[in-house]
Amino acid sequence: MPEIVFDCCVISNFALAGAPDVIEALFGGKAFITDFVAAELSRGIQAGHTGLENIFEAERTGWLKRAGLGTEEERRLLASLSRPLGLGEASSIAVAKSRGLVFASDDRAARTEASALDVPLTGTLGILTKAVRAGVRDLRTADDHLGKMVKAGFFSPIRSIKEIKSD
Image (cartoon, rainbow, N blue to C red; front, side, top):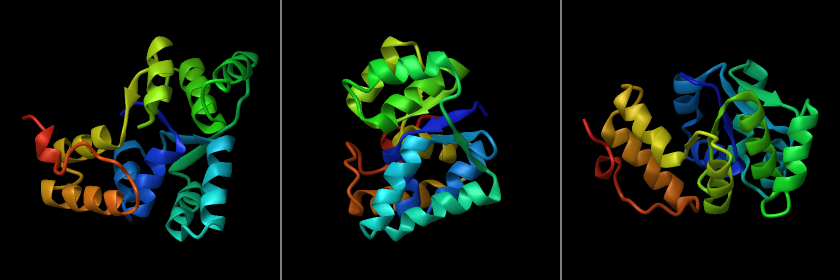
């Protein structure tokens, strides 16, 4: 599996659905968040979204890693992208572009900016679909995760992964 960097929304969807192990199974050891995304997650925990704590547990166990902005290219991209985007999305795109990672986001503006930079993309629904195709989850369980994500605030254009899954 390719290396991947998550924005706050996508990784939060899995955390709040009680399904971070889906990400671990698909991308364990190759999954990243930036410091800015970690700060957004911390604010979410402070606001009462305690389900987000399992993301930091994933960091402690090592299958999720922190990606700081280490190069001048990444800092330049962050500066240019932080005008139209939030710092979490901007930093994630900068890391993805600089390091050749996939960018996981559901945010339309962030996806547009990443696409313009030829950064490979996925999102919540793409990851759930990949989990079903890879046998990490059966369709029913993936749909259950999707339902929990929607209850937690995720806007989904579909009700079931079978609407996009093709074999």
